[in-house]
Amino acid sequence: MSRSRLYTIVLLACSVGSIWLWIQNSQNVLTRAGETGTCLIKTITGVPCPSCGTTRSVFELLDGHLINSLQWNPMGIIVLLIMVTSPIWIFFDLLFKKESFLRFYGQAENHLKSKWIAIPAIGLVVINWIWNICKGL
Amino acid sequence: MELQKVDLFIMTNAKFFEAHHLGWIREQLIQMDDSKWPTLQMQQYKDPTTYIIVSLLGGSLGIDRFMLGDTGLGVGKLLTCGGLGIWTIIDWFMIMPATREKNMALFQGVLNYA
Image (cartoon, rainbow over all chains, first blue to last red; front, side, top):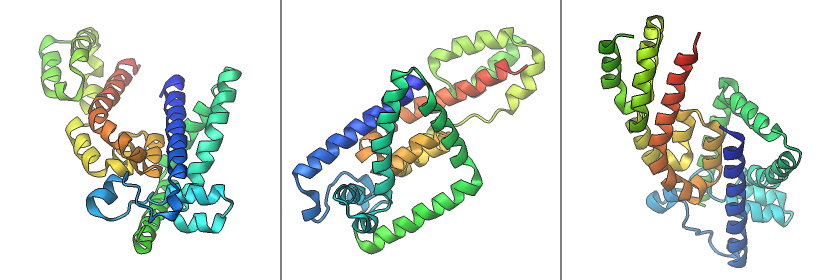
């Protein structure tokens, strides 16, 4: 993937994510039953997907409630970390005309493709999914 | 390379590539050395039809992108409920061209292979 394409996708995703959080915050998502209606799997089957509850998890984390955030969905921590760090990293890359984020992305992809990381990662996602279903998100 | 072989390759593998690339592929194959033919025949091209089915069924989990080798994008889709459902729908239309682009990269890899 080219540098400009990757940076565009990441910045676009982070922007949409931020707008999404802003909209959800104005509607006070935590006080409702968590029915956001955006998850295709949940809308069609009624069963939550592995990342359902991420928005609520991010809100709890922003309020400083780490345990509550983990209880909603541990993926929220990863999402918030990416949403905060990647735009700053890309901004510095663009400012100093470097490709460090692109290189990091390539290396991370290669690590994730190795079976020693991929298999435990898939296992964790499946466990999280089962937990989500048990919680009835 | 012989025209017969070139046309055989085009007929067998046309569905794996974009229609507008086929002319260029044909030209490259005609100019290509015969020694590369076995390598070219051994390539496992990804079937766009398979990927659209996977995208329709498991697009929300990013399985289509993982299969294609775009692990980073797959993780992105997985973490965000398929990009809030929007990315999933976009990928229903984008996954077939993306698969053909991957096949094109594979083909170019054979061409550049010394």
